[in-house]
Length: 436
Figure 1 (tube, one colour):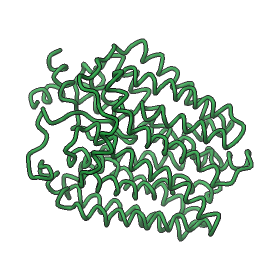
Figure 2 (cartoon, helix red, strand yellow):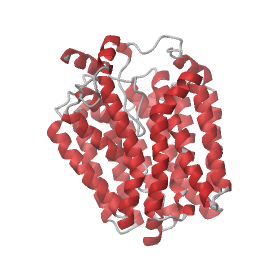
Figure 3 (tube, one colour):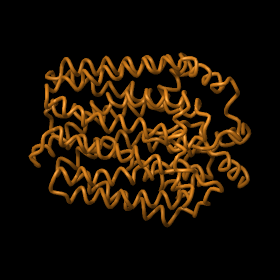
Figure 4 (cartoon, rainbow, N blue to C red):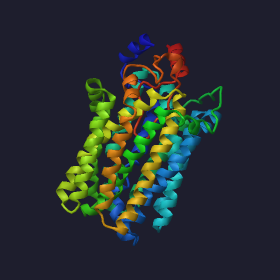
């Protein structure tokens, strides 16, 4: 393991086959979808005569379907193989993104975003595994390339959405469909067939995994955090009263900080303060920013500065929470990630819907107050697992046994914001070592 890792470190991340770049390109476009629709939310509301609460259902349908579909991604990929799963997910995104652009009603767009969520779940379930399996320029380089695609997609999504949205609100949807179609063709042509796993994964495996206290603690923490996150992402654009391109630049700044602190900031904080304390700090900082948004919703510069600054704690939290999930879970890592993704995406999906009801019943300030409260609640839930996280930092599982051995690392379903770099399928690594 160590010898292979040392060899991989010396190899440039750019020395990869064309298939790796094809999937990495698709990853960029997929991650763009996180903030792509943000700049066009006000335009959709005004041009389609829809209330903000109706428009933010674009997040709800997309994320709830993604959450539920995560429960079945391992079942599918373990039966048809990674390449076919990847292609199926890409094809679904191409079709439903185009249908969303052709729709003339908010209801239609919301429905087609749900289909998009299904494709997204299948794609993110296999993208990292396919990149690793296809890599020949070093595993470490493949992971760095994946993380680079993640960061580029998160940062570029709002900017591309703003640029295309300034022409028409349909532009971002057609843009994603076209780019994903290119990625689909490239994947079909360049990616070699992938073998079907020897042991199919039961459909019930992710739900059964949630019986484990450590995994459930991290999942509930992520649900509460995502409640605040997607409240901000779904409703902050409306009181800003900016054009699509202006909103694109605001969330581009946010995305840059997410990418920077996901890749560079989180590991440094973790090394200095440990996972638990770093997460306490990041979540508390985010709760304070949400409170500022709630108090100064009508003060544009405070609102914009708070949203952009939120990229810092969001980047830290995304990386460290995912890594913690992978370390504390005794089940296979694809199963653990699917279970975790199911719970956390539910929080992200339901938050915009509830926020809309709160705005209709009270005012625009209330959802952000609720979001701040849920993020603080996430700190409280996380604190119940403090010892668990300390053991994880020490390389021990919940029972005090060493983790990280080659035969214990069973792979991972990368979540929408990336995954733990240490999570690599043992069989894939063995295959890569054999090639060399």
